[in-house]
Image: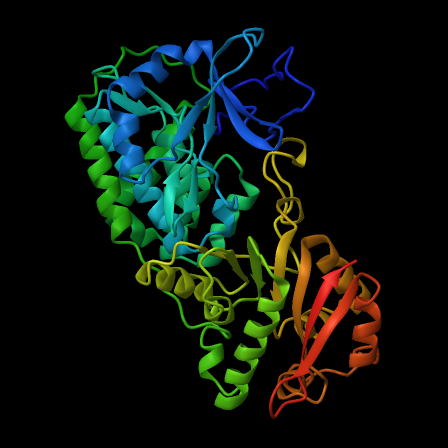
Length: 473
């Protein structure tokens, strides 16, 4: 849904006052999203009529939705007074909207391969993707799914794939930087909302990458061609690119991406639960406490597991009707979590990368195109297990600030307090002065009581750690 050269759109005239324009789709010249009476809807502009009709009549829409590659939709009746409107559609609901800079390597890889697969199937049906933005992919039922119904246009024999450059910037570049250099470079997607510039990718990749023909052509030569033509007017004959050539480009990209993998050492928290943080009995007791506190809440539609590591406790809840988002700032833990989600076919768990001390903010035009973490909340329940001592000790955050943050993101809170006598805090203070006189259980309860009712607290077996159930005031 990202069209860099498209002008901003105005909201429909004569639309009901209950309609609210979605700020993440204003660049799309074929239609936009809006919210009416709490429902997310999409307008299909009259100028997209031919492409939309062909998309349906060709059987491409049916094929992609039945195979789980594209979000499904229903047509909705609308007043004839809506200007320039061909259809109003209601897309299937995505429980939680995530962004490419929050995905692990394998999630981005799966999103890239899905985009290429859809493009191939589109060409076979006489259409082609005009938009290959990474933001057109979300995760549903544990798998990536394409969400932009208006990204398809009729394919004309001999024409190039106009979204090729966008694909390389949004999806190929961060994957190559992670595989060849450092997975932290995937965060460039947060800085460059229209995709990582190819010249930057080319400069950052090691010289040895030119030995890979696919990297050479899709990044290095592609970047050189961009730079050469950037400020030049070149009158050229319209080139002819056959359908077989397009399939060859897709094959080349698929082969390159499918072979990419992360080359990195283990991180500090990857094997957290395999280390001596808890004794086996204490760990089992903590798990049972979490399950018991969770059951006391009642119906829970959305759970955020903050500092989830590999999602050990959220998965232990064994709930199928609750959508779970696992957040962690260890990208390899998120990677491991996602692979387990795929292996176990878990349809209600979404692992994401997130640094809670610097969470995803609103970015894009007017800081409104992509929502911040807080804007995507609040969730029904947040888990914050063995977490807040890192905020308070490692990052010098006052308990008052921590409590206020949780107030904004959740209605219920299951939180663990780790006292100073705990091994983990002693380790954090090993090479620094203890300046944290206000970090104690009494002050913790006082600060959180400003925003939450403390419903229950239980000490973990053979430990000084305490579990709390809190409800927002």
